[in-house]
Length: 130
Image 1 (cartoon, helix red, strand yellow):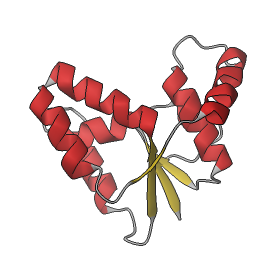
Image 2 (spheres, one colour):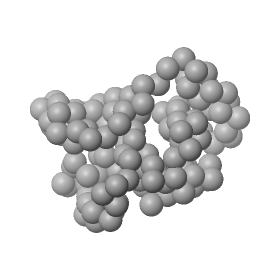
Image 3 (cartoon, helix red, strand yellow):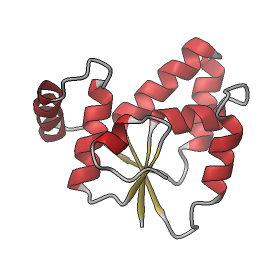
Image 4 (cartoon, one colour):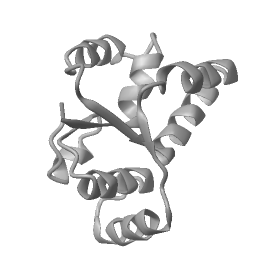
């Protein structure tokens, strides 16, 4: 089983004051040990930026060094970038981010089973949310 982990889940897991922190920990605990955890370089960058701005740079660096261990990170290359731009142009909502579009493309390309997120846009793209 492949599970993509989105920014909203990573941020909530690491930030104990986030309203979704407890829910994120429970969800994480329910992920089977054999699951392959995947994220992207864009999600990592977005999460580090959020943690740095909302908590501290030290928290952002700790997240990078501690939390990402054991999570495969797909590097957003030119092909993913171009596919994400094409998708971004098609989606009507102004609230779907470009980073989300790169995640949607990765989930499709890698045939990812589920996404661990609190972002409703994944479900609207037909991606199963944990």
